[in-house]
Amino acid sequence: MANILITNDCPRSCTFCFAKSRLGSQTEGAPAKFMSRANLRQVMDFLEGSGEMSLRLLGGEPTRHPEFTDIVGEALERGFHIHVFTNAMMPAETADFLSDTPVDQVSFLCNVSPQSNDAAEDKQKVAYALERLGARAQVGITLTAPEFEYAFLLPLIERYRLKRRIRIGIAQPIVGENNAFLAPADYREAGRNIVAMAEDCIRNDILIGFDCGMTLCMFSQEELGKLLQYTEGFRSVCQPIIDIGPDLDIWHCFPLSEVLNSKLERFRNRNEAVRFYRQKVARFRTFGCKETCLSCAYLKRGQCSGGCLAHAINSLNKLPPREAQ
Image (cartoon, rainbow, N blue to C red):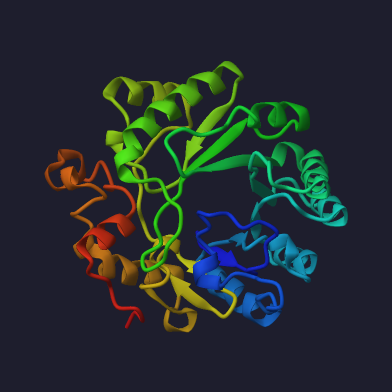
């Protein structure tokens, strides 16, 4: 699994955005950055040589790449499964094209905000895209505060017959940058609210799933039991994702993208990159995101990741080398 960042162009400016620091914000007067087709072919060769036939397209908003449909077509011809991370603000012709792609080869995770600041035209784009993508699209939210909105997703799932799943992620700090994120001191309260959401969703036959960087101590033992019944299952995970940018920069994950990055060409395959980054962060693994992690049996036994490594690195004020060697 690797994330391919094909553009920094995006119609939104989310405060928690993990991409803008590494890719650079696409601002008025500044040209958008797009991955070239030659670079993308190099990435596909890299993944194919790694035995991984999954192409996870991100941005920015990946559908804003001027050759997006051609990229999808070429990847399908090469036998890749394509997973598109999108805000669903795509032109109608793009949604139409995607709706005609093979159901078993193209899927979508749509990060749909409450849309309070979206223009009417953008809301219409989202509605049309969700209508066309239907059951192969899953919605997701990113938490920046312990209290959060989610109820607006339930009617969307029903109205557009989306996949009956909701992906929950926690906004993490980007080492060396200033973005909005959920503070570890708020994890326990957020955990209670996540369980309440899971109970509400299961009554609507909807399961929730989890992104990386969460901790076991966000939940009581009773709540963990409920998550076993009401969700896709909870595991505390923090591992190298491997992200690849438009210029073939490669990094451990977005929270560490500014301090632990290199070039794709230095690695023969993804497994080699994963081993390299695991070695680089090994000394930070024992610290965790909170002071209590230092004596936590869950962390010592490897049952809990201790949350996102960015918290540990920030708290120690000791950064890995900016250019990984």
